[in-house]
Image 1 (spheres, one colour):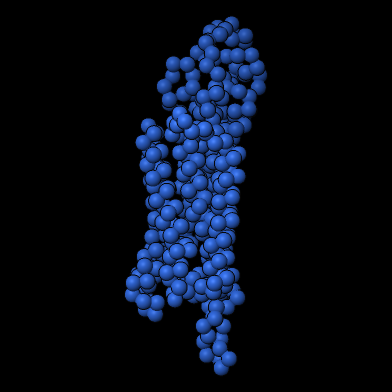
Image 2 (spheres, rainbow, N blue to C red; image 1 turned 90 degrees about the vertical axis):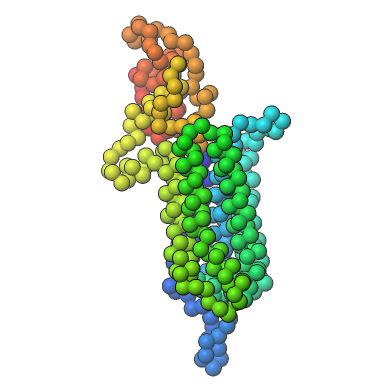
Length: 322
């Protein structure tokens, strides 16, 4: 599924960002001077952590915006004059944006000598707070504004309350992770580079930034039915991906039936399902029972499976045969 691949790329970026966050316990922030006094030049490990955090945090932020754009593409009605971009072209565009652009920003920051001790971790030194705001926090604020506007359009186009809840969680996690860090940088900019940020803000920044990967995994994973079922299986130790779940996913495509499954149209869009996956056929006599069935039937389908043979596998459930 396309949405699951996007979450996979987001998880890769978050995973490496977490690794570089953990490197902080090994980092000596500065070289010692020749006389043994503390020096000002960042140590090699500090530089590695700074570049790694800048790169993978920016990549993660950009992938959240790509997810928002994909959700809008699948939920919002297409414009009459604008051709709809294919998922393959969209994925190539996302890769061209989410990996090279963070590399350009992180590499330029390192080449200009801006990296150093940023407080609880190594990134851009406090003497270069304006440059830090331009290289990292300006893209961050731009991504948050884009996500907010896109999810507002998604909520306006969607009819399910769960879509609003999911998009609100995406934005809440974004704010929880990055707002304390942004406030720390603004305090340093306004109060001077040599004045330490307040203890409360510094503690919030140190606690919230490493949570990025875990919170993203929860809210983005929980919004997709297949990953949600995987979480339930891992936590409860039961197999929830059974025939009932697969039949429930198709139930609201039966003739004359209102949407009753736990999968909303917005979630179906993220799963890659469209109404074309379900053929709207008039009821026909079942060749097995000779009676009319309330489920559409066509040759090649199982009596237990009123959907294409490949669909159960796409939903993660078993495949039925007769």
